[in-house]
Amino acid sequence: MRIMMVASEAVPLAKTGGLADVSTGLSKALADAGHEVALVLPCYRQFISEADRGTVVGEVQVSFPGAVINAEVYETTIPESKVKVLLIDRPSFFDREGLYVEDGHDYGDNAERFLFFSRAAVEVAKSLFVPDVIHANDWQTGLVPALIFQARENGEPLGSIGTTFTIHNMAFHGEFPSLQMTNTGLDSEYFNWEQLEYFGKLNLLKGGIATADKVTTVSPTYATEICQPEYGYGLDPALEHRGTDLVGILNGVDMNVWNPAVDSKLPEQYTAQNYSAGKSACKSALQQELGLHENPDAMLFGLVSRLTDQKGLDLITQKAIQILGADVQFAFLGTGDSRYETILSDLQQAYPGKVAAVIGFDDGLAHRIEAGSDAYFMPSRFEPCGLNQQYSLIYGTPPLVHAVGGLADSVVDANRHTLDNGTATGFTFSNYDADLFLETVWRSVGMFQHHKDDWNKLVTNGMTRDSSWNRSAQEYVDVYQSAIEKLG
Ligand code: ADP
Ligand code: GLC
Image (tube, rainbow, N blue to C red; front, side, top):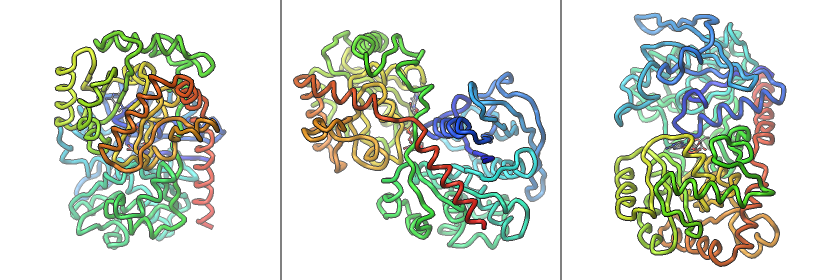
């Protein structure tokens, strides 16, 4: 199959969160399975050096009212893979400090930037890489399936491409003034309550949901949750309307990148069969790196996260002082809301040697925290999939999670039954409640300190679970196939 993946971020070129890991990881898995994959990305010049850009293979032109905007298309590959990368180079849109945000503010022209990017990707699909299926991701590319839908209604050749749209997070709609409709390249008839209009505004997430042949999201549980008002962010009726066209597929992990057996970012590598010495070495190196007391017995909790309300940080901060009364340490790495940045930094000040809070984005440290911690905090309020809890499973660092979305689908709570049958991998709690969170922390501390055999079972179960992309990539292929079959 010829598959075009369109995304606004991808490792190692540009990343703010899990979408970047997924667009690359899935593309690599699809290419490994024998499909021809092109990943279309904006050429963010801050992030993508001249050398990384490859060579110019063509040019695309997009007509906006009053102006034709063009971009060169560079071609390169994802390192150590067969995935072709096509970069849309329009410096006036993408040669910036950030991907979407600068100094805490969204760029004022994000609508123009990503409408242009989506339209450019569709131009690429006309000639430079003609796919059987286009897989678009999140609001930044929600226009892509809508343009193919329109082409189909108009009987144009582009309409024979199947489309799949993946929702990575319902909280981000890509909502803009209705005037932006003139920049979409769509007829104004698509600005209606069943397609791209939402309370008088242009809503790109809704556009993708309404017009793609198939809609997926990143875990089976989240696929059910988002059809309900609590998690649907107002688009639950639109999702319910798609019925069986909406599918939940759990994200996999790129095992060449997140794997303690081969991870060169760690001071020592280790495997599920032999982790004890390697993991201890990673822990003491991490304690040293972060200025924590080098105490092997203190239970070290890690967290690597965007610092936003989504991630359940209020539960941690509400109970931190109580938890720190025990022989525990915290290693936090994150960036985001200044409110959380301040609280975490204040905790470090108040508990030197017990709390480390690194405010920033640091991929190497993210790997070292996954490996060097004993357990991992991920009590998210909601979580479409979540990759960090899966990374921590692989690194032998049992996660402590709120059982929602992909957290519920990837972590099995430790109790006598699940420990005995070999399925337990971490600790879960079912209601978003600080006392319940604290109770769960004490369960984990109790097991770590007093029941080492059970703890070691948890570690091994998590490390040996199949977290790779193999199964999920095949599920996407099935979805693509049914998108194509729908065309008849
Ligand atoms: P989300 O996409 O909602 O942010 P995920 O768990 O799916 O959550 O993915 C987050 C990804 O971003 C992981 O690869 C994680 O390691 C990375 N990440 C998040 N914050 C940071 C940070 N401050 N420094 C380095 N990596 C980070
Ligand atoms: C989003 C979600 C996260 C998911 C990631 C990749 O950022 O918040 O849960 O893992 O996308 O799909």
